[in-house]
View 1 (cartoon, rainbow, N blue to C red):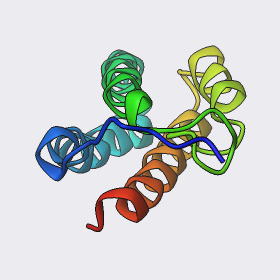
View 2: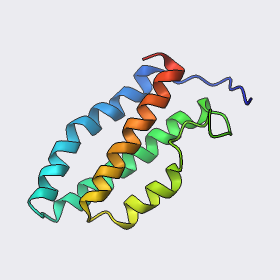
View 3: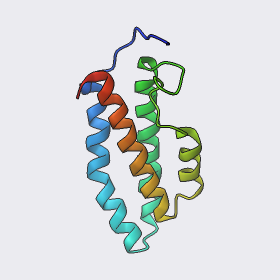
View 4: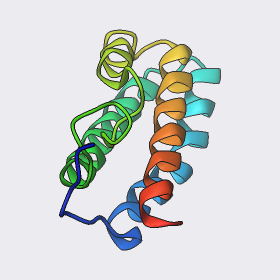
Length: 110
């Protein structure tokens, strides 16, 4: 198994999750109202998610059990980018954040 020397801390990752937790209801409301601003906020949330992946990457290994990324994360993220105007993109991004949060928690004990 791939062992890593890099460590991520709760302080490094929690601001990303707090921002997402605050932004998600706003995005949901915009989708519900069929407002074009939903896609713009989604692009911002996607950028934040990608930045979070970069923060986590050094702590993960290279195989699917230790890599700091949800299963099929790249394909799912591409779906979100391709379908950003769809409410299903929000659902999928929400799942990615949730799965990544769980994976990180196993490594930092939060």
